[in-house]
Length: 105
Image (tube, rainbow, N blue to C red; front, side, top):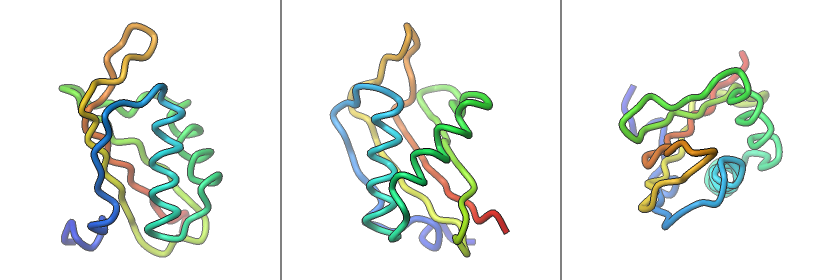
């Protein structure tokens, strides 16, 4: 599978900073809603639910938040490059954020 089949060019953005992990997920979800027509609140909820199972940071400033969503027939993704690192509870979180959404099927 080609990366361009997963992530649309309109789903790639840069951001100066984000105030919290929840705000980051809201931004990713808004992008998914705009680009892929997904339910913004449903995406935020799914990302937060998945993150509650364990962090999706993989190290060196990279995180791969992801979730399974109903009514999605393919894998789609969003990408945010944080120019200023996000600080959460004394931890430096990710600069490069991939958000992948999977079908529950």
